[in-house]
Length: 307
Ligand SMILES: *Cc1c(COP(=O)(O)O)cnc(C)c1O
Image 1: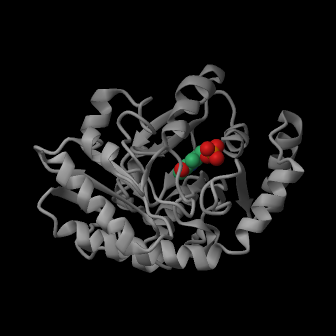
Image 2: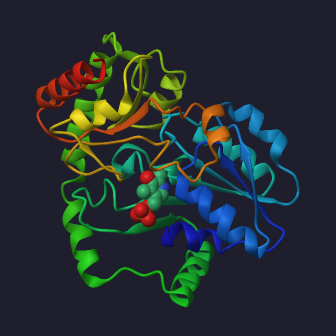
């Protein structure tokens, strides 16, 4: 959040930032509750179809912030197309790349101006460090951000820096395993009678499949699924033995969360329902455990949840 705050501090009163409909809850919250007090406005846009984004660029729009895949619905935004449109209006393209990590997706090479990472997640990889990254490829912008960082105090301590460097050394092998496990689990979930929908951009049925394939090295380790009617999400998550009910993601251990009451609770219920974050939607951060262990855990929890 310090990285995100530093980036938003680049803007001034009267500027508007376009954000995707299902951005990270904290990103919405900091715009809605903090930066709005300083006259920085935001507007929700549907970034699912890049051609539609064009119509939102009024002269006060200074940036567009996208997450791809989004949290928790794994919607895909075309980074090349979006940044081309933003450039036309001299607006910055900001990509929160937390879900992919630099191993799977490098938005600066696709035309983005600013890339954000919650390094708390995959970069750290072991759920033992809170850190953030801002990456740019423009010296001016780098200096501005460095000035803001120094002036406002959002810096990383030596021990956190150490943990982060240690985590990054295994990023590649962890991401390969996260992704391999997620792919298998997504395919398995699709075949289960207790499942209504599986959201994973590595499935050919996913509407963003082709774009994901073009712009990233894979679909990553995050997936969401909706339990069928008649299955209680509370019973489901409480019956899990290996997978832990917790916020956060990107660590070596599998974590599950219910976005409606956890990560996305600060989004009003009515907007939440409208964008598909129902009570029965669960988000799984697939860990690097033996995939069969994760699958049998989900399987036995579903049996409990249906009774
Ligand atoms: C967790 C997360 C953040 C916030 O990161 P912190 O490290 O918790 O401050 C921002 N964006 C995304 C997509 C996240 O998942």
